[in-house]
Length: 285
Image (cartoon, rainbow, N blue to C red):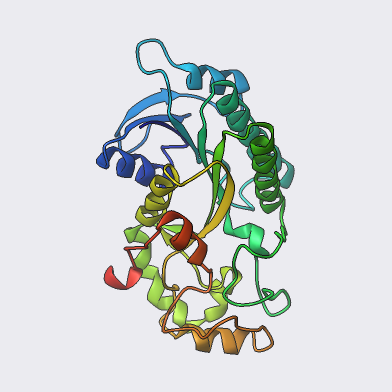
C-alpha cells in the first residue's frame, strides 16, 4: 500500500514509518520537520492548514500520488504541554482536516491516534475506573481539553462513516508510548505505585504501537472501530491483582487477573485486529 503518515517524525510516528516500510509498504511522512530516522519519503506539511493536507493527499508533483490509506498521528501528544484551548483547537481541527481531506481525495482507509485518556484518566482513589480491566464498552469520560478533543474525534469518525459508508476508520486508544531507552526507569516505579496509577500502570512499546497501526490498515470494514492499544503487561513488578486490590478495593474485577497482565483491556484489539504485543520492558532491563 501507499500510505501517508501524518506526524511520522514523532516518537510513535518513527516506529510506524519504519514498521510499514519493513513490511513492504510505500510510506510518505507528512510532518513539519524531517524525522531523525529518515525512512520513507518526507514532505513538509502543516496539518493545521487544510489546503496543505488536501494538496498532499491528492499527490505532490512527481513524488507520489494515489494514496491507499492515511495514518493520522500528528497532534499535541498529551495534556498539559500547551494551554488547554490551544491543545483542543490544534488537535480537533487538524483531525477534521485529515478526515475531510481523505474523504475528498477518496481515500477509504484511515487510522488515527485516539488516546487512553478518553477512558477517564487520570485514575486515582478519588477517581476510580468503573471496573478492571477497563475496555471500550463504557462511554468516554474525558477529564481534560486534550481528552475531550480525542473523544470528539471518535464521534467525528462515526459521522464521517455515516456520510460515506465506504470508509473504514480505526481509532487506536494508545497507552503511554515508550521506547527501549525509557525502560531503565521502570524498576523504580515499584517504590511508589501512585506514580503510575493515573493510567492503571499501562504503557505501549512504540514497536507494538506500530504493529497495531499496520494491522488496522487491513482490518475488515467498512465503518468505525476504536481499540485500546497497550502492552500485555504493566510497568510494575508487583502482580496486577495485588495492585488493583490495594489501590481500588471497591472496584469490581470483570475476571481474574493473571500475573502482570495489563489492566487496560486489549481483548478487542486482539480479536478485531489480530494485535499481539511482542515487546515488554522486562526483556530490556
